[in-house]
Image 1 (cartoon, one colour):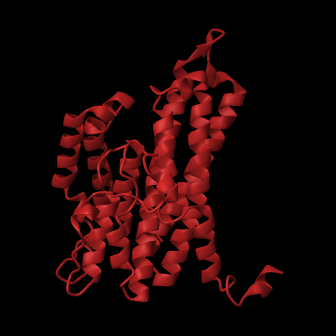
Image 2 (spheres, rainbow, N blue to C red):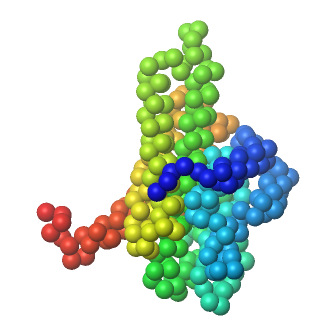
Image 3 (tube, one colour):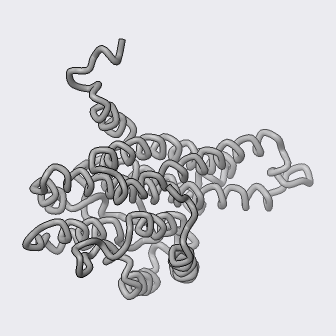
Length: 301
């Protein structure tokens, strides 16, 4: 696996950064700006990011899972309040079915998740999770196609979590550099430095395992791709909650207020953790791949 981005992938990332820096929310109040949100949604649609997994003439997707993950990471980092995961998974599902499967319109946006506990958690995606009709259609796929499709879903949620962690660390670092106590920046205090250093290490580790998961979607056999994505989801899920809570802690008292963006990062992370299963379900997938969950109890002794 070559972890370096190609020139085309760098251009895709730079285009995403440029668009989102202009139209994504920068304050909690921006989430109520309907005009801004509409412009962002239109720009994302015009960029074609939701159609990256549409089939080309050979039946393969136009873009790799790595390229989809590049977009997903930037959407998470900028707290973009526009659908991406649901439409991307729908496009991949249509590509895998013959004749192409049409899912109801609700899946063209990120629709309500099957878990009531996640509904309303994420202020940037208030409807929650993945459309039930989309999941039902995926269950009709052949086993290998279903495994690869699920691996894509896990990889994209991992990329979103990595982006959320990047945004949260950047927010906390900027605040620690600007906020002063006793005449010096709080970022000069060793305790704060340790918190931010640990958060940065967790974020970089998550980025590595998430990149491998995205690469595996198209490069490895379906079961191996699913196991790689599940492992990444377990790692990223645990890290993201810790990193986002650290960002709130570094902000001190203001971190617990509505106006601070730190809680928006945590809320987005909590929903992305829940999508396709968090730490427990993901580890169960990994263990099942290793033959330990059923009939392999000797490996636990």
